[in-house]
Amino acid sequence: MANVLVCIKRVPGASGQILLTEDEQAVDARHVGWTVSPHEECAVELAIQVAAATGGAATVLTVGSSDALEQLRDALAVGCAGAVLVEADTQHFGPVDVAESIADVVRAHEVAGTTYDLVVLGNDAADTGDFQVGVRLAYALERPVLTGISTCEIDGDTVVARGDGPDGLEVFEVPLPAVVAVMEGGVSPRYPSIPGRMKAKRAPVETLTDSRKPVGSGRVRLKLPPEQPSQVEILGAGADAAPAVVDLLVKLGVVAK
Amino acid sequence: MNAIIVLVEPEAQGASEVSRETLTFARDLAARAGGAPVHAVVAGPAPDEAALLAHLGEQGVATVHRAVDDRLSAYAAAAWAAAVVDAAHSASAGIVLAAGTPRGNEILAHVATRLDVAMAANVVEVDGVDPLVVTRQVVGGSALEEMRLDDAVAVLSVAGHACDPVPVESPSHPEVTTYSPTLTDTDLVARVARTEEAAADESAALTSARVVVGAGRGAGSADGFKDLLELTDLLGGALGVSRVVTSLGWRPHHEQVGQTGSRIAPDVYIACGISGAIQHWAGCQSAKTILAINTDPDAPMVTKAHYAVIGDLHEIVPAVNEELRARLG
Ligand SMILES: Cc1cc2nc3c(=O)[nH]c(=O)nc-3n(C[C@H](O)[C@H](O)[C@H](O)COP(=O)(O)OP(=O)(O)OC[C@H]3O[C@@H](n4cnc5c(N)ncnc54)[C@H](O)[C@@H]3O)c2cc1C
View (tube, rainbow over the protein chains, first blue to last red):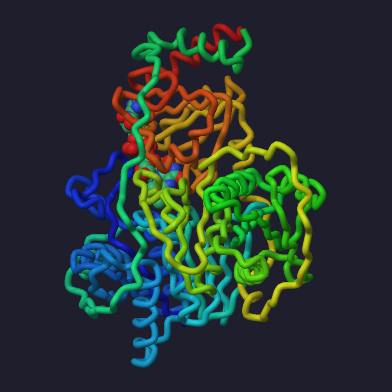
């Protein structure tokens, strides 16, 4: 039986143009909504699969504002059994602070009788892109850590995990308890069922408060990348443009005349 | 003067391109920091040591710290980090760099944790050296962050293509110091047990193709790829897709182009029904010529492309196929 803790982060949905807040300290999410990154959607899916395969339970955790309850409920709706909200003013949190906040919960739950054999996270948060919370968490808990993992399963006391490496798919076999940072692509996150949604609404969420004095992130300010002026040449509209397309492909040397 | 040390990733022909970019980046940083020497650290197997050393000389490296230990035969991030930390100490390095690759970022995260200092991932520019302020990519490259690094040692990864790898005018003859890093059993627990080839081969066709036909949500459904596949065939190219396409299960993940898929650099990329989100752009921006086919003239893929056709791909692609068949005879 493996108990899994999966850590997620509420982030602005930002696949297109983004705006910054006036103080340049955050992304203005008023018009883009909130989500979790694809890495974390896959981490949740893996956590549920591992828990189900071993008869254990998956618990979802986030460190942030109470608005992140929305993302916790989404994870409960797809099959996480429990949820933990660590309320904190994360505006000034850096990766060290987030890792220590999560480590505190893992230790406290251990004292209370629940050991997380596996802690899974996203490889890097979609907003801050620090690439280090999983690693720092592992050192704080004195556990081995793998990053860039696309699939994993438990075999006895070992986690067998796979991830893309420079020469192909790398396989790791690491003793539990361990920390795994997940890269999207290995599994397809499931959609919630209606009963799942109903259950998630009523599920209790353990709420803790973290009022540590943060180490911080070193952020001075955010800025937007310089706009590149468009230099596109429009070849035409609709099917009528086909000859112009083929002319171009000939000119570029990828079609023989 | 404190040295700047760069973790270099070897590959078949010497040092990887992103490592060479990082060495150039380090040289510029060193010049701004009053002429600090640039050192390199290499751990694990290198297919061609001579070519590697030649690349490091081309980049003006003063000293190479070459970690040797049989236990470094298979990749283990913690062991690589131990090797970097030892080299950084013996070089009295004030700044530790690596390329912002999956391994570079992973190893530096271990290094920063071991040194109990901050790490800046995917840096594109140095704004100031005293105090050290860098600009790095956040939100997948949609935004940039100015970050201040105040610790005794600054740890930073350099984003791919932040600069070109520029050789120095006359190559240096780096002094090579071999050493055996202090490794504990714990450092070797999370190591590669074996490598399975299959996955890499599946995307090889995509990354080596001269022409890539890209398809996004605009394909409409799993059945919407017939004409796109025919176009791919007619051009002797490969199909690449957006994440929407793989996450809806229309096409397999190994065809995905982007930040979390393959990075491609074909002669021509024909992006059909793809909006051009920054995470997709990260994977296709190295294409020599981009032709966008999209119903929306304001889609980022259209405005960033070299050429575009506005309209429904389900009308345009079959017409292009017909024209191609006619001309190819
Ligand atoms: C951490 C992270 C990693 C990511 N990694 C990747 C990645 O590796 N690769 C990737 O692609 N995305 C990635 N994404 C997702 C990315 O943000 C976008 O959501 C995705 O690229 C959008 O795919 P799309 O362009 O197919 O769909 P959409 O954004 O929905 O765009 C569809 C486009 O098709 C056009 N269109 C619609 N119908 C037609 C038609 N009939 N004919 C012509 N045009 C039509 C529309 O005008 C629109 O421009 C990642 C996101 C995150 C947060």
